[in-house]
Amino acid sequence: MKIRHAKDYADMSRKAANIISAQIILKPCSVLGLATGTTPIGAYEQLIDWYRKDDVDFSEVITYNLDEYRGLSHDDPQSYHYFMREKLFDHVNINMENTHVPDGSNPDADAACAEYDAMVNAAGGIDLQLLGIGNNGHIGFNEPDDAFSKGTHCVDLTESTIKANSRLFDSPDDVPRQAYTMGVQNIMHARSILVIANGEAKAQAVYDMCYGPVTPRVPASILQLHTNCTVIADEAALSLCPRR
Ligand code: PGA
Image: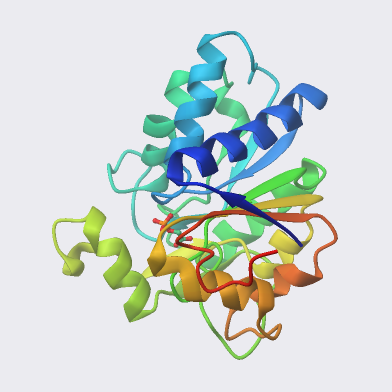
């Protein structure tokens, strides 16, 4: 695991966008695993800026998002489908047919999740997986548990995640209670992984991810076992970690 210090959110976002854009330049038909949440927004803005300057071309890029709330349609403004269009896809030359998000509108969880795994496999797996990290150490919506999850599956969101995500909804009652998420095994199969984190609220999770025991109680801790994982975090998120 490589840990890279960023000065602040802007610096973290630019460094992350640099890695994503290098991936696309080196392999224009890259399969990217993408994340939602507030952490990646700055990196997406930077990529949009570089796209407008003709520095990065998304025309052949294929994307798979980590997760989606169960029960939300693609056009629901709270859905991750909508988020990705608003924050990235609508502003770059990506072919929308090459973008994928789990189908939260499919009430048949087993079918929706199996179909998603089959699509990721058919694409040849993920070249670069972008991840945020939850305050409780979750990745995707893989919450602390007794065992690491495998493929895409339906999860019950924890109270702490519902509370953390409620800032994006009118009230905590509006936050869906379930989501479809890629599993930890899906994430670990990515050929490279980029985790980004900022702010003091993430400091404990970042410490546990990088230095704690590898345990499903902190799903992100398994990333210590990945052979090509980079963490870019700002000073506040790294405040509990030893300085190198
Ligand atoms: P955030 O979420 O980027 O909104 O902090 C990260 C996560 O929960 O994975």
